[in-house]
Figure 1 (spheres, rainbow, N blue to C red):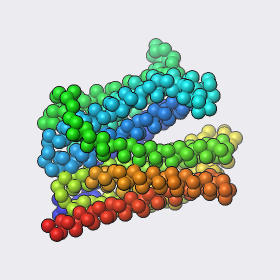
Figure 2 (cartoon, one colour):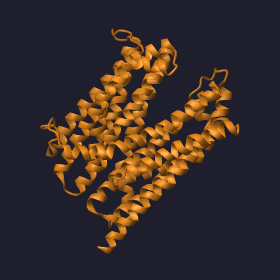
Figure 3 (cartoon, rainbow, N blue to C red):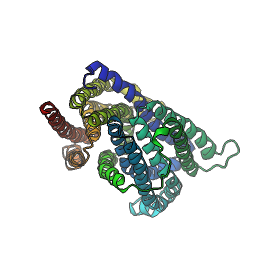
Figure 4 (tube, rainbow, N blue to C red):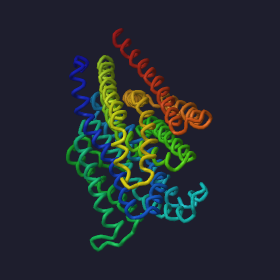
Length: 454
């Protein structure tokens, strides 16, 4: 495979990555549909879902580390012709995910006291606690869905990953419509209906993927004697997966901290920040999908011992991500007001003020598009060669030891407000990008040198 040209690498990355991009955008659409429909139902219900949903997402993103570890391990095993290893790591990825999910469920079931301890309004805490208690039933199925998606993506069966997620969006809207508002003879359950919809969607997605996997990949016999432990494979999955989970948490926490700081400035700034985050999240999904493709391609090259293919594939995927980042910069600077205006009622009295604030935030976001792309692509490539601990340390220090303090200093000490907070994000992401890319460069160069000496 090392003989592939840059153009051939690009075609394979896009064929693999574009369905994954679509899947990530569709996953974002599920969250967006919840917010929109609960916003129609009532502000209290929406606030409760935001509070309970944030706790669910934090636990989910940490637990997803084990599922994300399955992707490079399966890709490497397939490339190395180790069919039994594919089965072993996928099963134990499921074991680790189930174990984490069961351990984390009590935090959701008894979330209301936690919210009150964090200083949230008692009535809102109780409503959010009701949501969290019900949605706890979705955690294990959601993590298992991630395991099977990672497995199928590593086998380059990305189309099914896309269509299952798109189907989940449609099902979520239908069940939300029935249970939130009490349509079609169903009870009107409000925020509890949204939680039940999440449980329903994740169970349905899991069932669909199990049926597809059993029929499409019978050679791996994933579901035969799935209850039997494989302690060596479980240890390998956990060793690779827990740093991924902590890295995910560090990045999510960086943006959560920025949201808290924006709230200290004022409600209009917080509203503009929320809109800007939604816009940047959509474009980030493109880089995340390409990063997943980079993980798979790097894992395949790693399994073949193909150092030249690893290097050439990395160059291609970085160029693709960089070109999209430049396009994003142009969109952010040229179409700012129309994009922000989509989120605001034309009759909103503060519309002009929110658009003005959001415009400055998206201008700051344009500055970090290349570095944000660079850091997520580097993480994907490093996961492909099963290097996760050093990247975890780099990410945590860049985001929290540098990014958050710089955001505070620029935003408050130097009085730059929201723009200063976002510039601090740019500094943290830039630092992560530099050191993560340097880490991959060192590993890839070492592999190539060893290959040439052999």
